[in-house]
Length: 287
Length: 167
Ligand SMILES: Cc1cc2nc3c(=O)[nH]c(=O)nc-3n(C[C@H](O)[C@H](O)[C@H](O)COP(=O)(O)OP(=O)(O)OC[C@H]3O[C@@H](n4cnc5c(N)ncnc54)[C@H](O)[C@@H]3O)c2cc1C
Ligand code: FES
Ligand code: FES
Image (cartoon, rainbow over all chains, first blue to last red):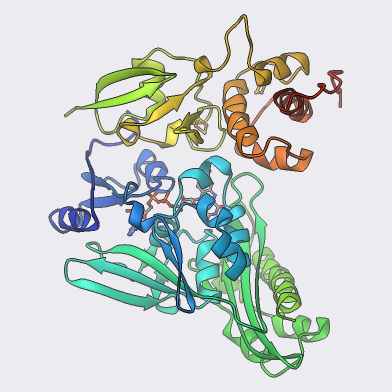
């Protein structure tokens, strides 16, 4: 057998999932697409005693436009994000990032909620939700709370999500006039996970950058915002020279990961290159 | 601790008692004796275990059998017959899309969904479309040709040249 033994329940509602989760004192795990959890269980890195399958909760598998936000249900598959007309219209960078996750079979199963909850340091969505200033809605039997992406990622595989909580939705402000966003990834050629991926969102007025958000995944134990770069861009026209100057020294190799995919120094270099590409594209889209 | 699940595989319904930790690929190969679905890596990488679950290609080594309860599954055994090959099977044969054949069932199951969604894919779309399937023999060029052959045939067009490409 490939994993330790466990019990399995298929939740018919969010309430049922939350009750099961609360009743198992940290020993139960939600199962969405299973494309991070099952590999981890096969490696025997984790051994939940109960898997609560939430993949059938259709209400949480839809994308809707809700005021000025895209509301993406936690169970929305990568494939559904990639092909959603709403996402393509209001936030093409997110659809493009989804299209670059893993491979078609992975995108058929994996979900945005599962990816965020798992918080793999090389996952794509963390950079996107940070740059796009998303909010993550979580619910438990104690009620529902919303955490900004900035406060969500705590460390490698660690988030603000408590053991008895479930992500229900991700809310992303739609891009307004003069705003553009893009994602540039240097992918591991085998898995397509990000060796370094940078998402950027800029808002332009009269050719000048009013505000920028730049977020990096793959490089460090957790996705992070490059706030110094953001500050250096504000108030300036996004020319090649300005971008080149702003991204210089984006990351300190001492704080980056070093593994088979690349040394910390290499990743630091990639941070600058991918940030340049993302910013260039975001600026072109905003103009 | 087993539970009964019911799956429809290649049109035939099966009710089987399984442990929750049984992988779908093991259900298919070991309990239902459908050994056309292969296990190449067991780590979600190679795509040899690809089957269709409710029409969507998926890696059955990364899915629990219990997750497939109630689903309709197609494996390579459900595609064509020796007398009447599916255009994809014919394409792989005509275009030398295989050497050892280990990756072929997964390639074909993946290409089934690809062509279903996109009947007229470009070469690039085919290459990205099979990005989750590894072949250690062919170098992919003839696999791409095989899928192009099948795409043309399924569209009712003349099939392209089947001259193999040696690179
Ligand atoms: C071959 C391969 C290549 C991949 N390549 C990439 C890539 O290029 N980029 C990338 O970003 N990812 C990649 N992934 C990971 C993939 O995107 C996963 O689908 C994703 O990380 C997890 O989503 P899931 O729905 O499969 O979650 P699961 O595996 O079901 O769950 C993961 C974790 O999240 C928890 N969880 C799930 N849903 C919720 C929820 N709604 N609320 C709270 N907790 C929840 C689970 O309990 C578990 O702890 C790859 C995976 C594979 C197998
Ligand atoms: S055996 Fe499933 S992906 Fe390789
Ligand atoms: S033909 Fe041998 S692995 Fe593809």
